[in-house]
Image 1 (cartoon, rainbow, N blue to C red):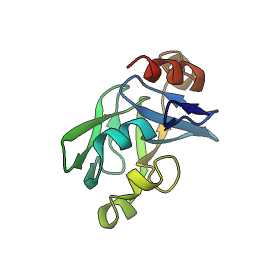
Image 2: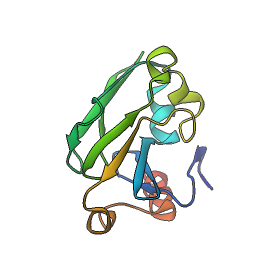
Image 3: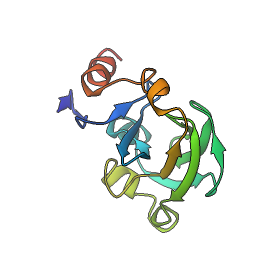
Image 4: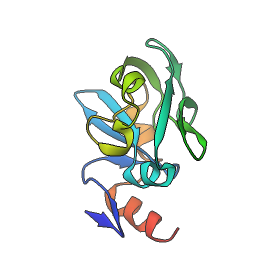
Length: 133
């Protein structure tokens, strides 16, 4: 699905701060959207919270630094980080080149999945949101 020139993947959930989350077997894989990656331009550094860190919904779980700015990454859900994308320490450009695949940021075990999903946008809602920006 396209929202202007930006890719929005159906089946994911989104925040208004431009993070996405994919739920797989009671795990949540999190990244930033194509919209955010394109706005940042060239990502040069990614800092992520460590494995076993507990985060709350919309709490910072790291940051992305580009040649233009440093942006916080907000967790779409509460939970415990169980895996970080180590490839980003060597290849931060994956966030730009493959925001929804190789550029994922963290994987977490969510705590309040059903209740917190209500605070997120589906793909159509997110596409409508960014088209108005």
